[in-house]
Every structure is written in structure tokens, then in C-alpha cells.
Amino acid sequence: MNWLTIREIIKEINFCMLNTTNKKEQIDSRPMLTVFDDSEVDSLFFFCMTNSQKIIDLRNNNNLSLSFQDNAKGTYIHIVGNAEIIDDIPIMQSKWDKRLNKWWVDEAQTEGLSMIKMKMKSCRYWTEKENGVIA
Image (tube, rainbow, N blue to C red; front, side, top):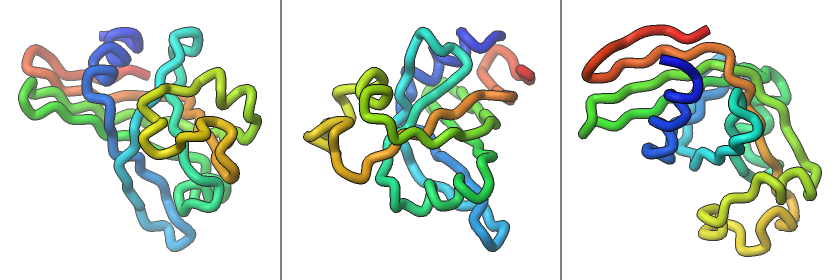
């Protein structure tokens, strides 16, 4: 299995649990819609408000992880990486996914909106056929 295959699997799942470490060194998780850009195969993108706890956590510790699961297919994926916080509207607009309009009708121009760019570093996966690690 490789990064392209992992991306194709998680595109079908859409939502993940995004995990950060807070100031108390505790793991904090929340559901997030995953956004993809095929020109950046090793990165995933997430949109949220700049004042959200996840942004506060990532400004203090940019390590994060994602957990994806598809119980019906017996697929489980855990990805670890580093976050970059992006507030540049043209960059955010270039990554915009119309599914996000459910939350932000003004799209990337929404005041106080940020984008998390996760550079994937490693992945553990379990499928009905195989399991393994990508580093």
C-alpha cells in the first residue's frame, strides 16, 4: 500500500477524528471533514475558525493525528503528521471544497477562518486484506 492508495480510501470516508495535544498534554479529538488537493499528495486540509481550540493546540504543538474508519468495509487508518496554520484567503480559496459551504457560506472569505494543512509523516492501516505501516 502507498500514499495514493491511502488517499483513495480516505476520500470515500470523508470524515475523520482530528487529534491534537492540549496545554495539559492531553489528547483532544474532534470530527473534521477532510479536504484533498491532488497536487499535494502528501498533505490533507481542514477548515476551522481561527479561535478554535484545535488551532490553539496546534500553535503550541504542531503534531497531530487523524483516525479514519469504515466499519462496513473493515478499514481503519491512523495518520500522523505536522500541521501548518494558513490564514491566506487566496490559498484557502484554492483548496476550498463546496461541501464546506454547509458551515461557511462566505467560503474562504469567512471572517476568522483558518486552514490546517497536515503534512502526512506516517500511517498505520488495517483492511480486510492487509495491514501495515507507511513511513
